[in-house]
Length: 296
Ligand code: KIV
Image (cartoon, rainbow, N blue to C red; front, side, top):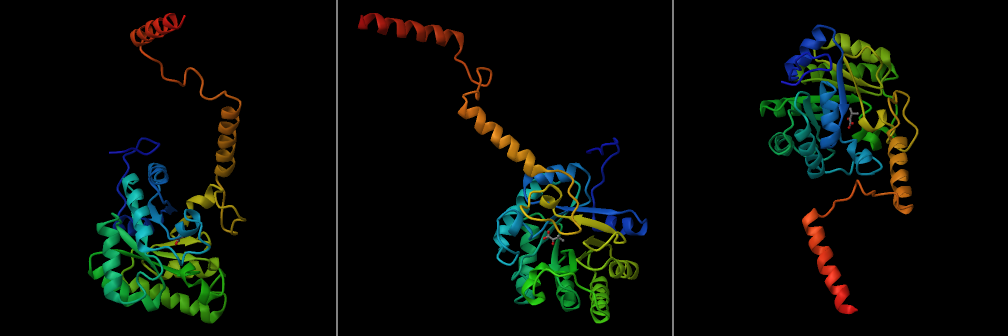
């Protein structure tokens, strides 16, 4: 069993542990990860949920938005993350188009994330209108996490990445969405880009744990994007992003250092080189000496 930095045994996080944390008012931590190395680091740091978010479309693949990423691309990253995760709950985002056509196809795609990707839950965007679909996927023994508020897969409908839930009508809709997901049995509900006051009302209303991103401190947990907290995003951060390190500067310094060392022939040194065994070296010296002698 792996240990926390304080030497306590680390527990496997399950859907049930998330509910227990909500009941105990213990904050739930979630970060995205998209590959083996980041997944290992995030898991070993004791984060509760690792989300293979479709934000990998931008952070890993350089797309402008999340709409183009495919199920196969998401699966490729989910499998890599699976190999790095031991204790966190592994959630995979279902990409745009993978659950929008019909419920049978949605269940088939969700099952791929479990069978081929090793995910323990999937995430789909949308509230009230996804409640029946969520029940269908849960009926197939696949836990589902919801995502409401600023849902990036609806960027074209929303007309940009705008904070949602700012009018009374929008607040009422968000409450209906959250309650519908709660009743459908969602494992947790991601609340993205909504006023703190609205997220607090939703969190108090539903039994399902809420995980906020740009939704204020009253949510049951918080999620951020791995690349955002490390400054690996090449643009100005959103208001809610807190940078914990400057990995861009660190990587850039390392790459500049390597380049300079190669150009100035300081890399590799003798200590960084392999050497012939002594016997081979003396045999080689003898052969070379003979050749030189014959040329004389
Ligand atoms: O794709 C993602 O990273 C997400 C989280 C930010 C909730 O959906």
